[in-house]
Length: 635
Image 1 (tube, rainbow, N blue to C red):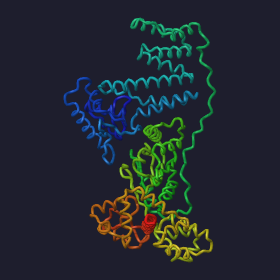
Image 2 (cartoon, one colour):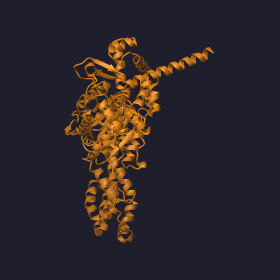
Image 3 (cartoon, one colour):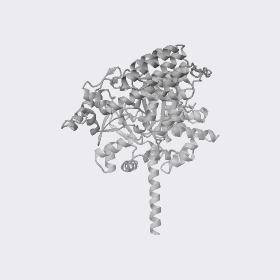
Image 4 (cartoon, one colour):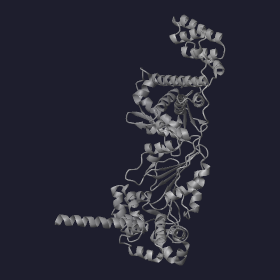
């Protein structure tokens, strides 16, 4: 949705106009939009709508107006139907990105234009200020009957417009566009017959165009108006300008044109993607699906795709590989932002936006200090561009939402260990383990095809023992390559011997620290869910039903279902169907598909072998620590 303030107040959704027809609804909404992100107390709304004589049931009337506005705005607010108007204890707040309001773009362009003028670049300043002024479609809030608050907002906006116009005129003066300015300034002085500053500009434009007599007549006409209407003489500045024109003072001649600045070299579009790996293997069907989702934007919708999976399953590698494959579709740049969702303290949206804005060329001094200011600036910058934004290791929807670009020509690819509930319009794609065939192929790329061909059974067993996790297979392959003549079967025997006895620690000795990654994933869950995870790992089979989980946890089926849902969302447990657990085909080892919504099989849950080993190692370490504590107490 977009909101127009610079002219008639309008609400637009795509090409549709959704402006409320009732005058008081328009006024209430306009005030909330102009103060977007702030809580507007109910009393303030009452003051704006009725002034000093509110009706007896004004509070109830405001509640009704907000209800009507929500009804009018919800159908256009997005797929989730969430309304932009939110209730707060003392009033109401409009949650609207600054990029959705035309005045935000106007102020940003004026700020850039002023900076260009200060930097002695009048041509750029004129272009930027002209673009900002072109956003005006008439007087601010022209179609509203305004109370004191809206009138103050409209006055401030008109003052901003006038300041922007004066800056653009100054840029034209520096460009020696005096003759073109004369006609425009005549129209402006006719509209503001007592504005001395505009009259001074008109006099100077005429004088420098060789029309001194006309310039002096402008002074005489203004003097008559001032004396007749206000009983005042023109101010000292105008009088000095008139005397200088009468004396043909050389100081009034246009200054020599500034030397032409060298053409600005357009900054190269950002290309921040990490390098792709030459040994990326498999995932062809998944890559085609992701490619289609990113390309399925169209209209005004921003394509946002979330790639979700457990630690080590290859989310970042897959996202980077895909981003390199489609980068030609995004000529305005590719941005990569690590969000640290698995770290003890994840990155703040404000900090991430600073990296994004600096990456697209915004000078450090021009990066706003507030999160809302940074979000508005990035969405304004990106609204007409084609950018690809890769957000790696996201912690949650509240971290990602402020980072999303404003243009439908952009695309966002997110990786996360858990589902991002609340991120509207996101397509979520689960990332499963590699099949045995794909895993052996990856191992061959790392350790050498001749070694895996010589020991096909041992190579397949290595894939199964590492649960088909690409990260584990990459480390195992690198280790084999470094160990020279050591056979695959000897390494497999070493891992198999450690089963149930700190197997993950054995893998860590080979180069894979999966324990710490899983620990970070578990740490983000509440204590009850962590306890359920450890209890369920004690089940005799890695595949189990919700009813079996409930019996193991000693709770009812609903509570067990909720715990399983949280573990599934965190990618620590997989939801499968019993028909899928066949061990055939091209899915993960022992699983041909991971699904939540398919029919044709009873719903089961599954622990990955390495995840199960992690839980058991964790419990064993806790038991050792508890025994040590009891021993210290008893001694």
